[in-house]
Structure formats: structure tokens, C-alpha cells
Image (cartoon, rainbow, N blue to C red):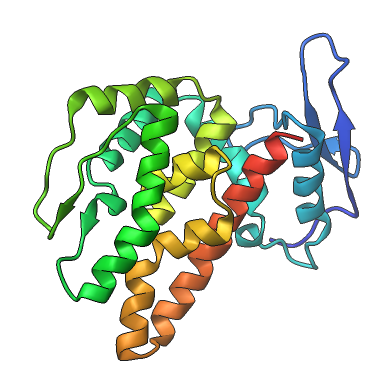
Length: 236
């Protein structure tokens, strides 16, 4: 799409009678979500980040480069209208959490998984009282329904913006446990990525680099960083 505006700016609506938050105006005109909803950011920091994405566009608009705007649209258009389905999907992820499925061999990989992954599961147990079963091999081992119910209750307390970012982190990492650690401020974006890509990176060291895999990893890492930045901006 050709760029149709000169400049984007943040407009503060916190004093308005019926709307609270910040929206982006393109040449003075308020933008809407794809579903034509008010595109309000809950914090000025998030609105400024989205505004910067609009201002950084060249002669043509590249939606794929606007990850913050995409996440906010998701929160307002999708998460807000299908919360229960999204939470159910996340609870299902916990049933097959990446960190719970360990290698039996080679021994060095198994040790790396234990060293990197177990502290993250321990943190979830200590801070959320959610204890997930760990196994070796690829055969599915069901998680205790009471533990999954605790996760369901916790996720139900998140607003649409936090839930949108949490969902992205979970799906990109294949792990609700990693997402919980990120949300709780226990690990950084780099640590989350290292945990999620431990197996992939191990295979790369053993067999060499694959250009297609590296390209995929690069895109996934950008999206993960954006989701974690999104969470940070919600606190400012």
C-alpha cells in the first residue's frame, strides 16, 4: 500500500468522557483497527512506539514491519472478542509444554535442557503454584487437571493487551512456562529465546547452519522481541 499520510502523532484521550487512552492520528485523522474499533493504546509509551512505526514507513507501507501495531490490533479485534477460546488454547499448550519433554540422549543435550529449563519450571511452581510433569522422550504425558485449572484462572485475570502478548510469546516459544517467566520479569528476551531454541541450536552446532532455518529463526526472534517489548511498554 502506498503511503497516504505525511505524519503520525499521538493524541491523549485520557481526559475524554467516554474514552480512556491514547490513539494515533495520521495527518490529524484517527486510525481504527481492521475491525473498525477505536484503536486506543492503554499507555502513552505503547502509543508512541506504534506512532514511531507509522512514521518510519517509507513510500510504501509494510504491515509486516509494524509488529507493535499488529499486536494492538490483535488485542482489540481478536483477543477482546474470543478470550475464552484463546485461554483454552493456551491451557492446551501447557499440556504439551516444550520444557516438559526432555531428551534421554545425547547426554550433553539432556544436561543442557535440565540446566536451562528446570529453573524456569521451578520458578513457575514457586510463583504460580503450577507444577508441570516432566518426562523424557516424545510420548505424550497428560498434565494434572488441577494444575491446568490454576493456569486457566491466572490467564483469566489478564487484560486483552497482556493476553495478546502472552499468546505470541507462548506460540513462538512453544511454552507457557517460558511466557510465564517473561511476564513475571524473571527472564529477558534473550534468555527466553535461548530456552525456546535450545534444541534447534544444538542441532545447528552438530550438523551446521541451514539458511532457511536461520531465516525462519530470525523472523521468529523479531516477533518474540516485539511481544516482550509490548509487555514492557504496557507497564510505562
